[in-house]
Image (cartoon, rainbow, N blue to C red; front, top):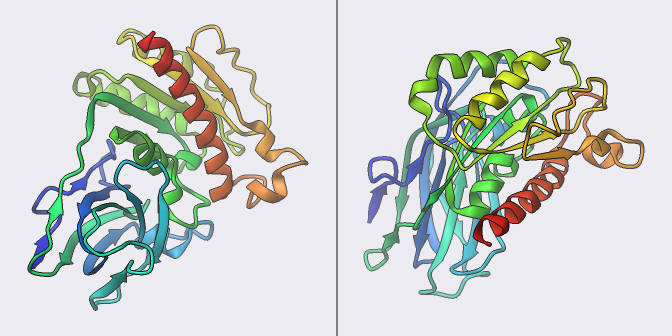
Amino acid sequence: MRVDLLKEGYCHKTSLGDINYNSYIRFILDTNIFTISFDTFFKEGFYPHVGITAQCGIAIHYRFIGEKIWYPVDLLRYWGEELKVDLSSFIPADVKYEIYIAGPIIGGFQSFYINLGDKNKIYDVEIDNSRNILMLGGPITFGLGLTSAGDSLLHMIERKYTCNVFQFSSEKNNFIKEIKTFLQRTHSKLGFFDYVIIELDQARQNQICAADIIEIINYFRNYHSRIIIWNCCPKKNNYNLQEIVDYYIDCSEVFGESFEDIYTLSRNYVNDSARYYIFKKIEKVIDYASYRNYK
C-alpha cells in the first residue's frame, strides 16, 4: 500500500514566514519495515555551518506509544530511489510505534510517499490543541549550525509536547527588526499563543534593539501570553527585561570557557548539543509554568 503523506494530511507546517520551512511529518505505524520516497525543495545559498541533511534532507526519530524517549533512526537525503527503513532490530513485529520525520530547515517537502504491507495501517497522532507555542528568533532558532534538522529547538519542543508549535525566525544577524516587521504585517492573523519563546540576541548583532524588543513583548502581553526570553550570546547588550517578561533564561554559558569546546562551532554559531542544552532549560520553564497554571 502506497500512501501520499502530504495529500493525506500527515505533514505539519510550522513556519509563519513567506516560505514553508521546518515542516515535519508525524504518524503511528504497525510495521517495523517500510520504504519511503520523497522530494524536497531548499533555499540555494552558501551554508557552511549547516549539515547537508539539515539543508535538504530529513531526520527520522521513533518512540514507543506512551513513552517519553525518542530514538534517532537515520539522516537521509533522497537520491531518486526508494529508501528502506528497517527497524526490526529495535521494534517487534505488529507493535505500534510513533514516527517523527523532520524536514530541512531551509526547505520543505514537495512530495513524500510511504509504502506499507497490504495488511499494515498508518494512524494519526493526537495533537494537544489546548496548547499553542510560538517561537521567534534569529540564526540559532533558525537552525544555523545544525547537523540534523531533528535537533532544532522547534522539533525538540514539538516532540516533547505534541502540541501546535509555530516559528518565525531569520538567519540575519539583526533579526529583531525582522520579527517586528513580521508582526506589523501579520498581527491581525496571528491569534493567541499560550507561550511565546523569543531568542533575544545574537553574537554578530550590531544594532541595539531595546525599543523594538519591548514593543514585541508588549504586543504579546496584550494577548496574555506567557513570554519566555532566552539569550545565549555573551552579555554585551543589557536589555533589563526581567521585570516585563514572565521568564528570562540565561544560556550565555554555552560561549563560556568551560563549555565553548562542547557547544560552539565558532564565536558566532552553536551546535546540536547546545540546542539540546537550551531546550532543556526551556522545557524546565514550560513544565514549571504549566504546573503553576494547573495549580
